Image 1 (cartoon, helix red, strand yellow):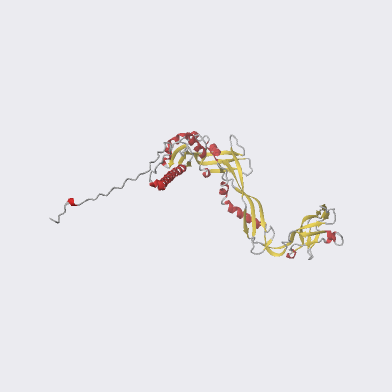
Image 2 (spheres, rainbow, N blue to C red):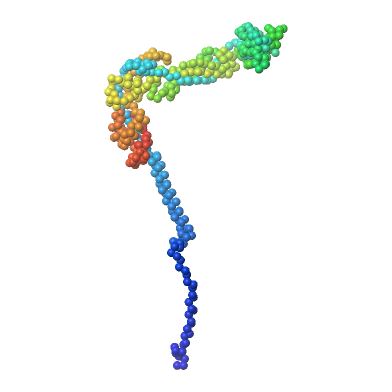
Length: 439
């Protein structure tokens, strides 16, 4: 019992509480003082929140811009594909038609076409002859003797420093001197000269010439000549020569080769809506040049050059004018829509031109065969008419164009036809690809 502790024996010591601190009284701010706002969050306060909103805004902008760009690209590329088949029929034709340079009630106007078509080639002569050629060239004769002109009669001799003699073929007059800027200027004139004898030894280079006829007089020093060209083509012996027969054969070969493609040559240059009348096409040779010249000798194995200045010619008519004349009284034009018509197989018909010459003012043409007649369509006019009438389907197209037997209209993309307004719908914007397909 002595070891038991009694609660009353435990004395609890009270720890005194510290006295509360006294703070100085705060002055009450007047009501007009600026309010102080607390930050919404620490993320916004340190800037990370603003950064997130900025990224989100840019993302939304890029997405909207991309979608808008895609839509605009699709709208820009949207188009209409329209395939039209004109009405057509086959008509047996057997007519004689008058063609005239000027349009008439009972004639069809025609015109002619001439296209420059130069040709050239190299050819062998293949013919040898014994020839004697005199060298030739051009000199300039000067007159320093006086202001009076100097007459040099035909066969006047010119002598080179080596003693080679050349002659003036015809009489010439060399002008006298004149004064320019206080200086005396000699008169001069170009003159063609020919060697006195044939032979290659007269083929010489540029040099000066004296006039032996003036020897012993003052004119021997004051009237003289200088080469403008070399003296050439002097020759004596057996050699190949460029003959007229060889040149004619070369020209005929060039024309024959060009004739193989003559129709295509002319057809590529035809005015729009015109056709070439079969049988009128021809090549006309205007002039021929050879190098070396005709009659000149050439070395064995060497070829001469031929240049032909020619024209590809033909007669043409307006396709619709000819078709209307050939089909007149043969069919009811209203059946084909009442507009312009053409004959698709005009080149397959039997056509004969009677009395045709390139410079003829009128002629006759006989035409026989089965003509495949078809209504014509002007693509630009068709497009404008479609836009003005706001056509939206194939049925409306057929109702608008009586010359059409079939129409197929497609939108690309398919939903482009449902777009409202002239700025969106490809029909109103004129984005129409029209294709004319014959049956």
